[in-house]
Length: 307
Image 1 (cartoon, helix red, strand yellow):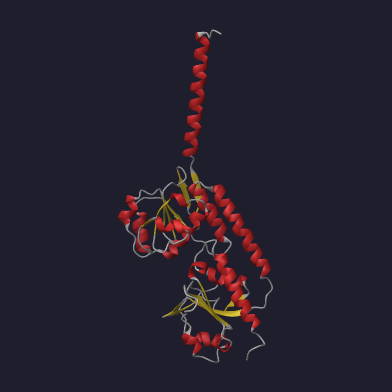
Image 2 (cartoon, one colour; image 1 turned 180 degrees about the vertical axis):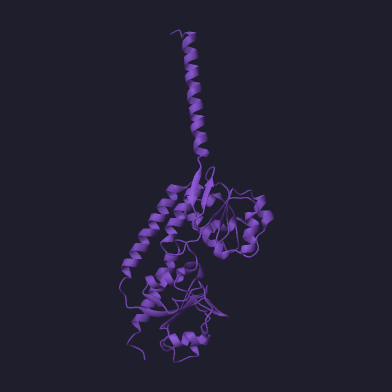
């Protein structure tokens, strides 16, 4: 069959139109702007999803991986050790001392910051670089799912982030239902011993305790991590004393074991949780919840069997 020149020209123009349309659509998808309100109420606008992200907290690194954006993380700070792949990412310093030259050399298009965990002086220098900044500040257990979803939006991985957030929310709901209505256990949670420090009711660790039926004996204090006196602990006479330790066989509760009139001492109700499972605002905190709930249930089991 003979093809006329007019038909050839028409086919060529049609092909060019399709190619142009495809190119435009592809460019639009790549350049689609992203607008997200971060955890401090700031609106972050990016011309396209972030491709090179620096994380300034171990929990942020975990959240980015949970959101399906692990491959986009190009820089992390000390102790960003989960998941295993995070250990291979370039280190750009610590929460107190960032390597600004290294950060610039990595050419990030987004830096995710934990304001409460990074030195303000370092953050001011960071902001002066002009690189877009997103603040991740989840405060309560429910906030973690929202943080995962928002990070998925800024990184262009919303589907993976939504799935991870849904799984976390469902597990949290199951844990709340399982431990609802349990007899309360007065708890003193020690985060440091020199000076003696605890958590207030606005701290996420207090949220964990509450889910398990624990009553934080210092919940009413205002600072997130207040310094307290030893006498205040003795006066409030907690039934259990908890804290974080990477080694369950080692703790820093010797000062309390010297007070036999303390209820926690009389019943030997001391427990530790791995810090990564209770101090990080990530989906893994639910592993910490399960561990705390088991410890507090053991405390309840001793009631009536000991003086």
